[in-house]
Amino acid sequence: MSPAANVPVVDILAFGEPMVEFNQTGEGDGRHYLQGFGGDSSNFAIAAARQGARVGYFSAVGDDANGRMLRALWAAEAVDHASVGTDATGYTAIYFVTHGPAGHEFHFYRSGSAASRLLPSDVPRSRIATAKVLHLSGISLAISPEACDTGYAAIHAARDAGVQVSFDTNLRLKLWSIDRARAVMSDVIRLADICLPSHDDMVAIFGISDPDALVDHCLQLGAKTVALKLGERGAIVADGHQRHRIEPFRCTPVDATGAGDTFGGAFVARRVAGDSLLDAGRYAAAAAALSTQGYGAVEPIPRAADVLAAMALANQGRP
Image (cartoon, rainbow, N blue to C red; front, side, top):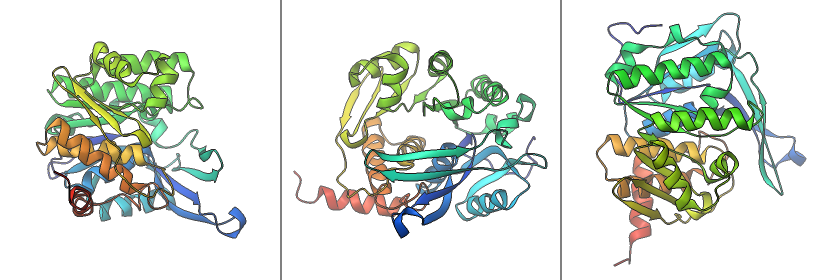
């Protein structure tokens, strides 16, 4: 799956499984669903592209209507999908989101999906070598043993080429055991230049609840930069020289689906653009908060102008 010579160079190449989403809207006694798109790495790619980064995607879809809808989405969002293959015998994964007193729940239909059938031989090594960042997640590695091997092959291709590796934990225990998740994620965090863990994931994996201790743990494992997502409590961004607590950005949330992916995409996009650790963290927190004000993983992701306007408004009157 090597790209052709005329395939554009990108800042960020994301690897993972795209999905078509059906999100419960609360209308019709819960029987109405809004069709959208998801898959954490695809969400990340779109979020980064909406902030101005040049983004590409490495994956596979089925030769089906859902796969064609995803390609149309990426084309509209300026996410290059030349490295997304079409699997004639696989299918494009889907999921449903329901909402209740405990928050949102996910129901996935992905076993045997086209993306889960990718092999290390499919890794677009030449594209990775010309990017600035390779991004993947725990889900990218958990959907199948083959996908895990492919993710590792991509990581090593990036490291061999001096390309940064970005990793979001995104723990899904329906996909693998906690022991395997802990072993693989610890190893990938060791290899990551940018680690984007969520607090709940890290507590489940490592049994550490204190946010600063979790940041320390990731840095000790080998991550160069850590942006720990704390949900409604904001975030912590740190490297070996500095640490900043990012206060939550005020918003009126209705659906948190994909907010962590928006944070990650915005954070990496702004770091690629040259922002400081603190500025990128503040920007990402604002983008993630704004993304919770609509339904679905993709539709509410804000664009750069919206984020900057919201941040400017929030800063009015501050010293």
